[in-house]
Length: 430
Picture 1 (spheres, helix red, strand yellow):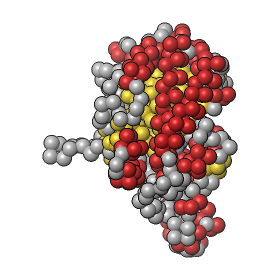
Picture 2 (picture 1 turned 180 degrees about the horizontal axis):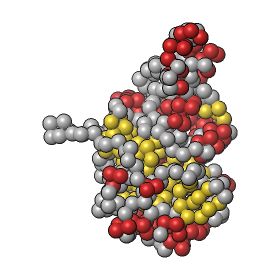
Picture 3 (picture 1 turned 90 degrees about the vertical axis):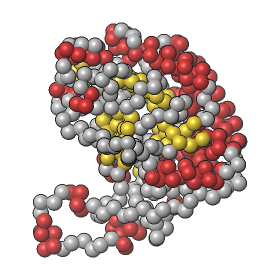
Picture 4 (picture 1 turned 180 degrees about the vertical axis):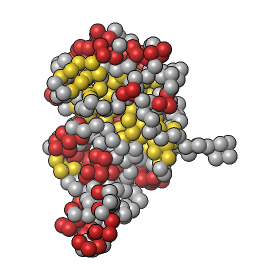
C-alpha cells in the first residue's frame, strides 16, 4: 500500500505520509518507520515529579510593573531550557478555534487531493517527506511545509491553491504570529544587550515558514518517531498544539522529558541561529515528537529566520578576548542551502558552525586552547573518533538583562501590526 504513495524522481523519493497506512493497523509497521534505537523517556515517580519548562506571561514581559524581573526570567529560560511557554499572548481564541477546524479539514482531504501539494523534485516545500537515501528512516506523520515570507518567494502551487477558507484563516494567523514573534525576538535581543534596531535589521521581513503536521495513532508508538530528534536551525519557533494531544519531548541533561502544555499557551523554542547570535548564552535544545496509540495529534509550527542577505554569527558586542567567538560566520542563504541538503540529525547543523580546534588558530579562542599534540603524542590513540579533535570553548555567561529605555515595545508592536497588515494584503492579492 505504501508504494502507491511514493514517486521516484531519479534517485529521490517523495512520500506523502502515513495516514492511510495508519487506518489499517493489521498491516503492521513497515521497516522503514521502525526506530529500534529510540531513547526512552525519563523515569519519574510521585516523589520526583517531572521537571516542567518555564511559563512566561507575555503581558508582563511587555508592559508589566516588573519588566526587568520578567526579562531575567526569559533570559534564564532560554539559557537553561531553550524552551518556554507563553501565556496571555494576545492571539484571538476564536481565530485559534477556526484554525483548528480548517487544519483538521485539510488533513481529512482525499489522498488524490493532497497530491496537488506533493513535494516536487529538488524541493523541500509541500506535502510529504523528502527521502535522500535508500535506507532512510521515516517519521510517523503527514506534514505540509512552506515558506510564507518574503511574500514573493511563496510557491504559486502551494499557498494560493489551498482551500480558500484555510488560506484566509492561515493568513490571519500568520499576521498575529508575526507581531508576537517579532516582539519576542526583540525581548530576546534586549536580554543579551542588543538594541531593537539590530534585531530589526536581522529579522524584520526575514524568512518565515510554517509546518502543519498530523501524527496518526500508531499501534506501537514506542517503535516510531513522529519527528526525528533535532534542534531547529532558525531563530525561534512558535508551536501551537492544535487539538490538545501532547507529544513534544525535549532533551535536557542527557534525558528525554515530555512537555506538558499549559492551556491556551504557545510553546516557543530557541533555534540554532539564536544560540549563535548569543554566542552560546542561549541554548538550542534537541527535541522530537512522539505519537499516541489511540489519538491523532495535530500541530502547527511557525519558524522565524534572518533575512537571506544577512550574515549569521555572534553579535559583535558580545565578543571580547575574555569571551571569544564560539561560532563561525556565514551568509544566511548559504546556511539555508546547507541545512536543507541534509536530513535532520540531532544538533549536527549547529556543530558544523562551532569553531573547532583547527579553526581556532585564527581566533582569540586559540590563545586559551591547549597545544596541538605532536606526531608522537597523537599516535597514542589512533582509534579515537574525529570528535575528539574538537575543542569546545565554554561559553561565558552574558550579564543578566538591564532596563533599556530605548527599547519601545509599544512602538514595536504598532509597527509590527502595520507590517503584518501589508503582508496579509499582499498575500491575498496573489
